[in-house]
Length: 133
Image 1 (cartoon, one colour):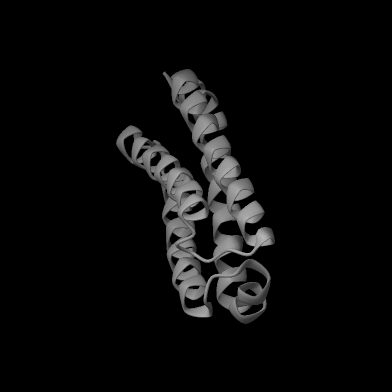
Image 2 (cartoon, one colour; image 1 turned 90 degrees about the vertical axis):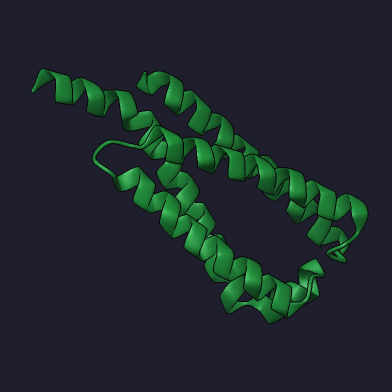
């Protein structure tokens, strides 16, 4: 019983980091899906692109939430989430720099802030993995 408590205590931070990522990502995905027209005018990318991103984010958020809910948080799955978060952040900055997503100024600022948030989640998840050892 004590070993289970220690294990649960050791993964608490990691679970919290994954759960926060899942919730924020899922809400963001729902917003892109529900308000693509409004957000397109504000941020710049087309409604189709925003809906596609929204669908991806919703599914990704559900997957991260599922990972966080497992009795034992899989290390490999967590490392994949971290890698995907870093990739997302780099791709977001690249989209702003190259102009490929035709961001408005507000959209460019949003994309950079989003990239920083996602990198923050990745860092928290790395810290959570270390604490879980």
